[in-house]
View 1 (cartoon, helix red, strand yellow):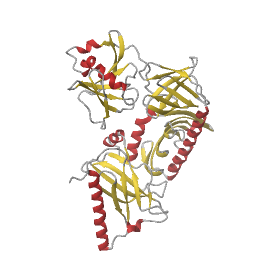
View 2: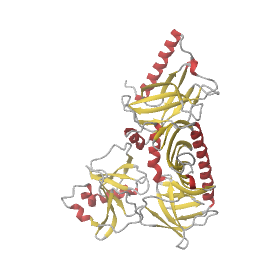
View 3: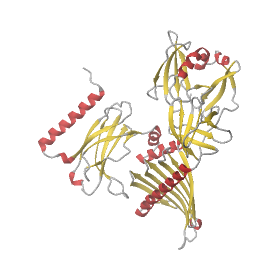
View 4: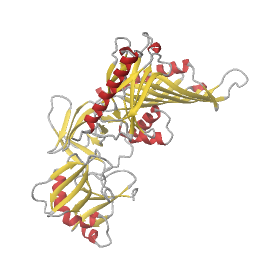
Length: 521
């Protein structure tokens, strides 16, 4: 009988526990108080090969907020499918009942790239905390892995890289404040739920110079503080000279984890006042964001507004200029005209397929793929609007023998393509590739605005039953997939500098866009 990977993993864990119990029972050197046990789980439906990655579990002393956490004990062993059981022995003499201890769990590749990690604290041992815990680890994005390969030396480096990649999809809240002779402007990047992710400030300190400060947050907790300042020195032999000052501080679950500073290029070590000052400034920045969000929630939505949404969609909505109508503009789409609906409070505009309903600067956008929460943002970078003056190509031109792309057969495959698009999952769907199969069937691979890819099987004539299935792994790519995309006229062509677009017509009738990816071979 062949055991599943999950059963085998559990069996290995049970055998390990039994062996350990046997050893400790014989030697008397280990007690129940001398180990932390538990499980590590993740929710993603993927399998990890034991020879490809390791589970790393650490017991940390996190008692001091202004000092790095201290490792008490750690173990590393090959991964199994979750739940992964761990037994972490430690020296009881190192445990102070007045201190606070947590479990940290990570899954790393053999070369050290981070795949999963916990993003919340799991207290153990003291202050009535247990000695057995279940730790949830979450998948780290590809940006983080790339940062590690390119020299990122810590988990904070990888998290910061992921935050930077996320910024274009976040809501932007601008603001300003003054304190004495100092004036400052800031931009806060938050989720649609208002959770702070990143803040950048520019401070004009008057006669004392200037300072640029950045706050990075994870789960609303300070992750990194950086300052790049020009300070005017008063007093002494260097009176009036400008000092170039840099400060970089990293935090783990709100506690100082390490950092560096330079003064006129000379390296130094951050002192406790700089650490506590950064933490205090972070709290003030968070209070300003909270106040700005409160003001925004009460502000009426008028004119032309920019919305960002939880599903990463972005659009403009104009609420004035047309009587009883709102105009919604997505990337690469013809504008949508929505009619006003009577509501008890707030506002609602809709047509047969789409609607936007909200109050203040928050709204719910609803389309064929369902609803998503959106909020007004100060700006959106790279949001191109409705179709411009693109080159036109007739569908007959694609049938020429020198066309080696899948689009050469698009005319005969179009009935099947249309059937697949009619039942496609998600909004704003494009076709990555279509190809003929045996027995009068056609395969169609699609992608929606959230990056979800689906395989569709439909009859060549488009009549009859259509089957769709999610493509699980992003690496499962067909030859020529994505080289050129077809997007129906009702959809939105992809954005970005990599794509060049053509209007596809048939006998003078516009049927959609062809978008060629010039960044891939």
